[in-house]
Amino acid sequence: MTSEKLDLIPVTEWGFFTLPRPMVIAGPCAAESEAQVMETARGLAAFGIHVFRAGIWKPRTHPGSFEGVGIPGLKWLQRAKREYGLYTCTEVASKEHVFACLKYGIDMVWVGARTTANPFLMQEIADALRDTDIPVLVKNPVNPDLELWIGALERLGRAGIRKLGVIHRGFSTLQKTPYRNDPGWHVAVELRTRYPELPFFADPSHMGGDRKYLLELSQRAMDLGLEGLMIESHCQPEAALSDARQQLTPEALRILLGEQLTVRDADTQAADYRENIGPLRARIDVIDENILSLLKARMSVSREIGHYKRDHNIAILQTARWDELMEGLLRKGDAEGLDGNFLQALFNVIHQESIRIQNDVLSGGKEPTE
Image 1 (cartoon, rainbow, N blue to C red):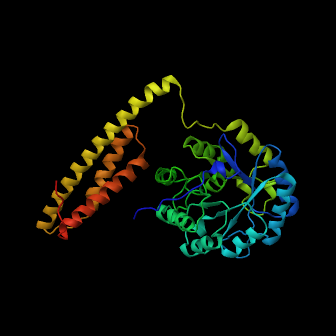
Image 2: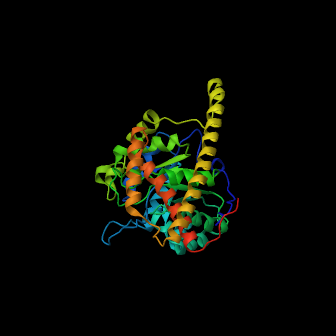
Image 3: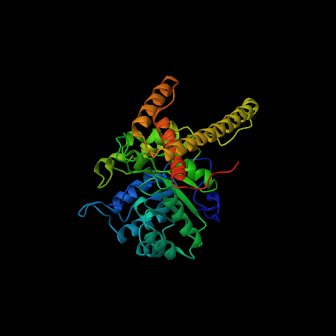
């Protein structure tokens, strides 16, 4: 299915952010008390943060956990805006949340990962935001479903939301990783490729789940050329009522952003770069064309194999043969210095396409023409 075109207002025209990158949204995971909100806001405003985030409603897996302070927190955000000149931002998960934010003058809202995964809630939020000028950021869904993410954006776009962006916070996974959520950067790259004009933020706090990963993940976001970061900051992280391990003090955040993070340029006029990047890209183009030719040849052989399996009544899937082949490929790839996870993912996709082609042959599907 073809994705709908989004009619977007550039993020530099929202009035919130200033260049150069990164554009930063910072503040506590949750608004816990008026004193906590104001102390954190004061610390962030002191070194130039312009957009202040705080969770007012907190979706939790189990009842009885801290689920946010609700409406009183919106009043605290109003005060932070009034006293420190900060733009305010919070998460919404229902039309009631949207209406409350509009009533209390919240400047920007974001949609969380669990809500993005629910088309019914996304439509409800889009309808509630219709005919408003408030910017909306959409986090990726919990699972790496790119079309579900795009569908959420399309619903908001159809509601006339033009100040629209995304937040990449990683994906839930059953695999063991050092992070709270698997970064899944390839999904972000694919969305970036399809919507290059879409403002793109990373959320290293939820991606890492621990402050020790914040610099590493923030740097990766900058290396990929993303516009901004949403980072959780708390005046007393160790006392936070939620996600204490992943929050930084305002001073620690100042050091990360101002002294540790390297921001990459989108382009340069440097002569040596201009002289060498073109030929290197041309070589990539030739290699990619060769890969396409090899893939065509491989699938042609798969089709022939399908004919032999059909004629001799042989099942398509031969797991022992594939396991042996994969083991050999990974061993050879390792000798060539290629990442095993990359090779596993690549050849699994190739294998799936080969199975599809053979299945077409066995089911009498239409043969391709040259």
